Length: 91
Image (cartoon, rainbow, N blue to C red; front, top):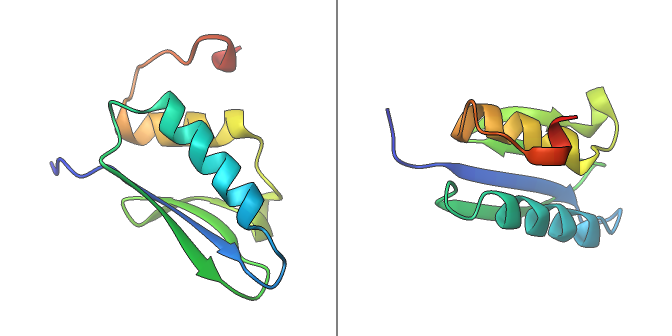
């Protein structure tokens, strides 16, 4: 098992989704400050908004719509800190 726990948020620059990506990044870094080793924002095009954990897609806007932070936190938690409670976000 690797010690790297990397999250990548790829967002569309043409759609101007950087603020949304940065806000989600802040939410994830605040929640998983001890668990994550890296969080990257990756500029893209074509309406992309994808969240990956260690290169595994955990959220894709094209398939699932824009994510609520709680849903992304659960997906990230399941991969970097399984079994950890997210408090009110788990309800």
